[in-house]
Every structure is written in C-alpha cells, then in structure tokens.
Length: 284
Image (cartoon, rainbow, N blue to C red; front, side, top):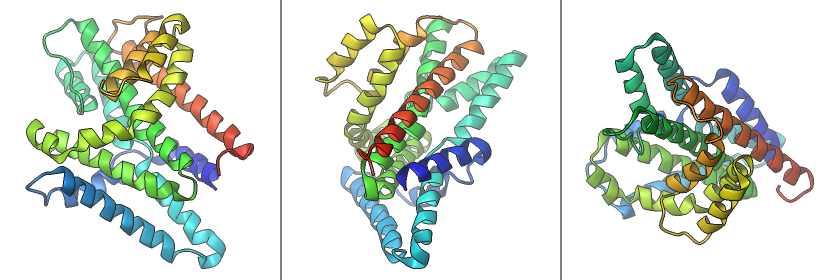
C-alpha cells in the first residue's frame, strides 16, 4: 500500500497541486500564529500532539469499509505533506521575471525560494546563482526526498512519521518568515531537523554523488558519514554541486533549470529504488 499511495500522491501533486490549498504548511499557520514564546520543549509537545491526533484518526478508521477509509487517509496525508505547490509557483514566477529582465521581481522570488538559508548579499552573480541552485535542491529534498524516506521506511507507521516531519518543516518555514533568528533558535527546530535529516540526506547524497564526478563526489560522501556537525544543507548541496559543476551556468534562467533537472533525476532514481525494494519485499 505504501508504494501505491506514494505513486498516486506524486502523480496528483505533479498534475494538480499548485498553490497552498493542499499544503500542510499553509493549514498550520493558524496554529503557529497563536504562539508568542518559543522553546524546544514546546516544539516537541506540539509535534507529538499533532502525531497523536493523526494516529487517533487512523486508529478510528481501522477496518472501516474493508480498509478503504484508511487508504484514503493515507492519500490525504501524503497530499498534504509531499510536494511544494507554492514553491513551484514561486519558481515559475522567478523564471518569468528573469526572462523578462525584471531584476526586482526575480530577486524577490529568489529570496522566497531561499527563505530557509538565505542568499549571499555581497558576492558575485555566479556565486549568488549557485546558492539559488542550492536552495532549489534543498526544496526538492525537503518536500520530496525526505517525505518519501519517512513514508517508506516506517512501513505501517509511514503516515504518522510523514505527518510529524511535515509539521516540523512547516514550523521551520513559518519561523523563518515571521520570526527572528533568536526565536527560531529558541524553538530548537533546526536542531531537531538536523538529526532527523542526517540519514535521508546521506541516502540522497549517494544518488547525487553517483551522478557527479565520482572520483571527487564519492570520497566527499564517505567523509560525510562521520560528520555529525556540518549542517545537512551543506552536506547535500556540496555533493550535488559535483554534478552541477560539469556544465557551469551563469545565465539566470539556465542555472536554476540545471538544478531542477538534476533534482528530478535524483527523485526518479530514489523512487525506482523504493519500488524495487517494495517489489522484492524489503519494504512494506
């Protein structure tokens, strides 16, 4: 059921999910807006409470209509947690502005795409475009690769793990947009996601390393296995840049397109691996 649900969710997301309507991040804003103090304990309590609600709904639906209701709930949770509809709109708006030479609009959309880690200010255009590539790669990881990981490896508890991860992702995005770096640090959200991302980042990094310069990318990947402190954003994007370095771009349209194309290839590769593992019974 995991593979079937995942394929259906990804197909629906690609065809119909645009904007914020089916985005959990948007739905949770009404909850986050009520917060005035921030702490790691509060973040953990909110996340566990949300996961308990999801578990309760799934438990109540067990056995109803021969499991059809549970399947529908799995699909709904997947649609809310997998995919970046609003980010895709921002990406398209960036490309449109860049083609038209609208520097102000393209810069605004680039800042939105790089909301979590930001873009460098005093740097060359080439360095800024490289960081935009990294931001797009990280969006693909946050909204596709990491959700796929938690949804599949946790088996029957996949929707529960996915819901918890998506909650933390939504909270981090909301804090980055509306609050100060100090408040974000007090919430402990970056600390929690750092450890939750450790394994999936390195699994995604294998695909990036194989698509990049193997003689340089693979040693970097092996070195990352013992690295507990480097931010996962830097680990992932460093490996991806080995592949992107093959065809360096300085064009504001082609440079982000190269990153998106690479991210799609990696997503397809990981999806194929998940399908094969599921078919051979390694995953449920």
